[in-house]
Image 1 (tube, one colour):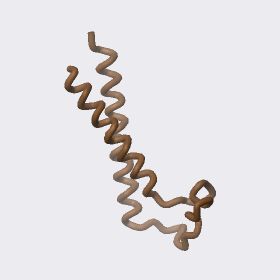
Image 2 (image 1 turned 90 degrees about the vertical axis):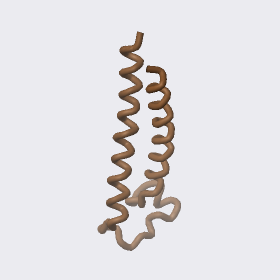
Image 3 (image 1 turned 30 degrees about the vertical axis):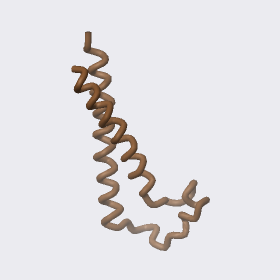
Image 4 (image 1 turned 45 degrees about the vertical axis):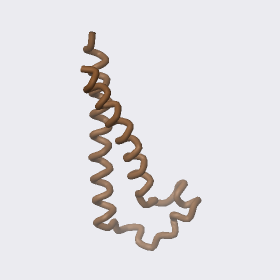
Length: 81
């Protein structure tokens, strides 16, 4: 059971780093920190490209894996003797 726990912890760290990178790759929607650093200068505010939609899907998928790792580690902690 310890090998599964270590595997989930490694996956959690890698997933967290990758999730942070994916979130930082998103375009700013305006009205926040992205405007302060020049992200609000975009001309196509209403449309989202195929790449942006795929980035959204990939971010959600990595987030689900990250969440599942947290739940798995919690279950292992709860039910291990």
